[in-house]
Length: 374
Image (cartoon, rainbow, N blue to C red):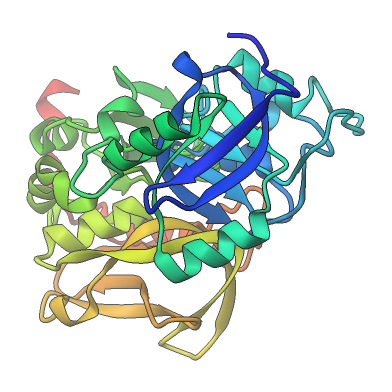
């Protein structure tokens, strides 16, 4: 795919709202790219956002006006490639300035086949999405009528399992820490693996790996990763996690938090426009400590459905959304936000230490399956 720079383009939301701009990045087939439009409020870290697999099926609108200023560097990728459907920006920097830069953001988007639109009034777009909610969209150089039709027919993410498009096709190992962790890849970020790898040898497994196969690896703990799509649609994960609970300590982040809650019997729901940014205040219920957190999710756990299996440990101070939970009768806990935050606030990095301590405390007394195969 070739860049379509300087061509007039439009962004059309499913409700018919239209924005003018110019095409950038890769040229989508037929001049039309579609997905669910969401906005992110980070001021830096655009490469990490774009390469977060949790954005599969979505088009990312950046509220910060200048994107691409420092280019891209291979070390900042959070996955093997971007999985988002597209990028919306006000001003896409053409000449990056940073000693680490390997290429411009636009060149990176072209190389990975990600379409973009620039010159959009992202302030107006953000205000509209805050009022009307995240919704499907279409953008590109096609005729406005064709874009409107494409936006109206785009399904969005509700009720959709998108994990199959981002998970690893086969297991692999990373890290060299003394403990043993099996990590379910629902769309795992490399920053998470760096944190886990410092305390454990981590075996990353496909999202559909049966619980029995996980336990046969005799892990000290199981990690449930972030990922895209509707947690209610991933029933196989609910079942596998349910069979792991009580057998081995479990820690989940983002989608992993929602899936753990579902395995404990709770329900999830879709937020109007989600939480996407690097500056969300979260309150810790145990001691009233406030953490500034990095977040990326469109779904949340319904607090009134957690009882009696779990209790809330963290709340979002902006809107009260459940940001953390712990099981009452088994060693398992999770958070909705991203404690790995690469880049971002580091207030919540202690959670990885809590997981390490939980594994150390329980590993000797937990059932250890698969010893015969070892």
